[in-house]
Each structure stands twice: as structure tokens, then as C-alpha cells.
Figure (cartoon, rainbow, N blue to C red):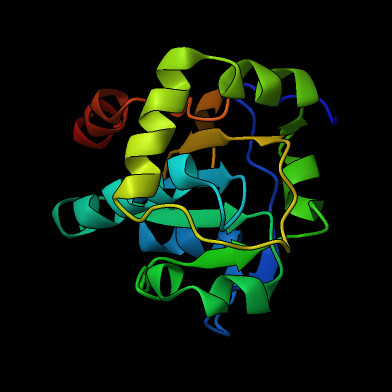
Length: 184
């Protein structure tokens, strides 16, 4: 694992092509004058991640004047595009980063221990079962399974205001913190 990032640091720049074949340069977002949420998810098969992506996508209309979102999935582009669920996220960029290049630059973690803590938690497995029942699990054997999510709130100058590294698979930055950040 690379070193974790902290509030006050400048976010590592990236220039990538998203799954919709759009060039995504973090430095271009500085010109837009909006705040940014960069979220790193596990993979296309993770029901916790898919539910979170769905929740964020539903917030996009309310937030889009003040906040840009960029999502990373640890998956191959063709695997992401096989999922009608993920194709429906556009206009929010989804970057397929199976090699974990940007994940590493942001200090995200791969942890069998944290993965096992989630799957061994009766509470989390009950939530998992409900998410699967609602269709948030996507059958894919082409994914890695031990990434732990992370979220980063960046100001208009690409300074990290909040770096949130998940304690387990479903642990993301609370919506209340994102909404407070947007309103500041």
C-alpha cells in the first residue's frame, strides 16, 4: 500500500480515459471552479459498492452545480461496460483501474483482514443479502475482491479537504459530510 493522503495535501493528478471513452484530467476540474468527490470502489460485483454508486448517482442532480464526482472501479473496462447498471451512471466518469495505478497513488488499501471482517459480520452480511435481493450484486468472475474503498473531498484548487479510508468494505464518507462540504 502506498502512503495514505491527508487533508491539506494537493491531490495526485491523473489523466485517464473513462469507460465512456472520455479523457478525464483531474487538472481540468480545477478550471470548473467546483468541489470534487473522488471515490474508489472495489469492483463491479460488489453489492455495497454498487448501492453506494447508485446513491451517489441519485444525488448528482442536486449536487451537480457545486460538486463534480469521479468514480474508480478496480475492474477492466469491458467488465464495467457489461453491466447495464454501471453504464447508467454517465455523465459521472467511471474509471476502470484494474491495475490499481491511481488507487496506489491515493494510498488505497488491499486487505484480506478487512474483507474477512466484513463477510464475518452478521450485520454486514444481512445488509449484503438485502442488497443482493434488490439486484445490486452483479455476477462477475473477472474481479478482484480485497480492495477497501476510499473517498476524497477536494476543493476547487485540488487540495484534499477530507481523506476517508474505509475501515471495511461498506465504509464510505457519510452523505452528511459531503453535503456539509458542498455548502461551505
